Image 1 (cartoon, rainbow, N blue to C red):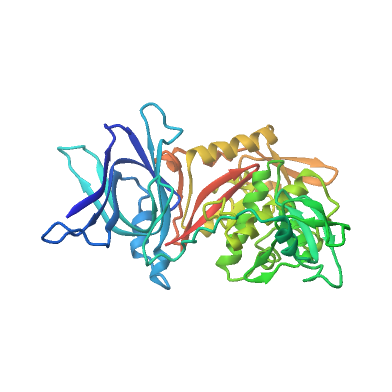
Image 2 (cartoon, rainbow, N blue to C red; image 1 turned 90 degrees about the horizontal axis):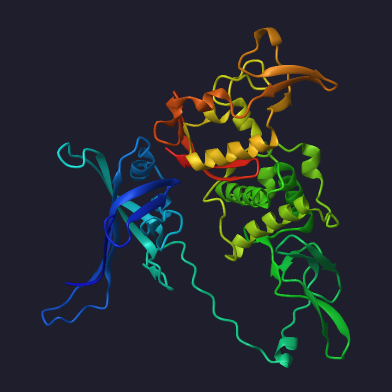
Amino acid sequence: MLDLLNYNILKDRIMTSARLFILGEERDLLWTNMNYKRQVDAFGVPSTYIEGGLITLSFVSQENDYALWHNLLKGVHQETDRMEKGEIYFYGSGDQDIPIRKYKFSDAYIVFFSETFDAFGSGSLQTVLTLSPAIQNYGLTKDFVKYWQVSWIKPTEPVYYRPAQEEEDRIIYINGHFYNKDGTFEGKVNETDYEGTINDVYVCDGKSTQKDKNGNDFVTYNNTKLLKENDVNVTHLDFQKICNIVKHEGLSTDQNEYLYIAHANYNEGKYKNTNMLARLMTTYSSVELEDKKRPLSDDAKDNISQYSRKGVIDALLREINISTDLTDGARFWDGVDFLAWGIEIELKADSNTKNGHNKFGEYDYVKIEKKLYGRFVLNVQEKYPNGVSYKSSHDIENDKGDHTHKESKKGNKAIYKIPAADFLDETYWTTGDFFYKNKNKRASGLVATKVAGYSIFWKEIKN
């Protein structure tokens, strides 16, 4: 056999440390190796087929490793539902922030899981995983793709220079509303002899003035792309409604908050086999019904309106593989009330009976990486240094929790500290990250993937 590639990188060699990212988890690696090979005949002539590509790695076991081995055991409709994507970052000595090499893989199965304890060796329980990816990139300019992949997108052909006459001949005259990728409204077209309808929505790279064959000036929109969802044209009115709901769901001036909300909404639409607006019009979104029905005006040029349009456009461009998911698979998000109401001590502001945020009762577990939690708390504390107030329906005599009350012109208010006291309980931090386990079995757990503004974003992991 001929070894074509054999990367066996240990922590005490040139690249001194490595970290695995998969299933919303991070693990510092003890070692990892990957091999490719070709069979050779008796004369040493190699075959044309390259075998191998398995990635084997090891790390110190953690309490919540069940998210990994459960991937092997969970019930699925089809085997490809077990496929995951991930990355391995390699770092040089003394630099844990900027990787000097990256392995990326997708359409990957976990094909081997092992735990080993040796009291006379390392003294720690260690996990060994073997991954079998269909799509792999080891820092090269080209992916290595196996025939059984399901998500690889063939690279597009390069665009070559076109002579002016050919450029004029290929101009397509279309009707619709046109927006830049940054959410700026560029204009609309509605001509009887043009293709399409004014209800169509396009993203473009600005507009320019050109001359037709008769020498007359006309405005054209550059590099237009029709916005679709599930192979159906997104109408202008629906686009405006989605943007307005995303605008109301956001809580800050951080544009990433609106980008992530739109992408999470897009993920939820795909998961439910429907579309973004259909999900937003349900209780999936907490925005008031009247606001859900109201379109976001094209004349709205404030930053938040543009961030909202930008987010929706970026999410919809995933239909044609121009953009990618920014949330690492998130489908839900929560705001300030998640930190205010906490786990089980605080009585919710809108209830006389329910303690804690709903997420802790609805899911099997809730996991938040320490740095995400810290960023979320810091963002909210900067906004509400003296606590956050909510309209209260509490029976004061039977109240529960550490929050206080005050009367205002709009009625009684409950004032909650950020974060709620039970977030500080060491019981939930034994792994170094926040981890809550429900006493009652639930069908799935939540892993936080992103924080932006005053929102935290969740990926659901089925048990």
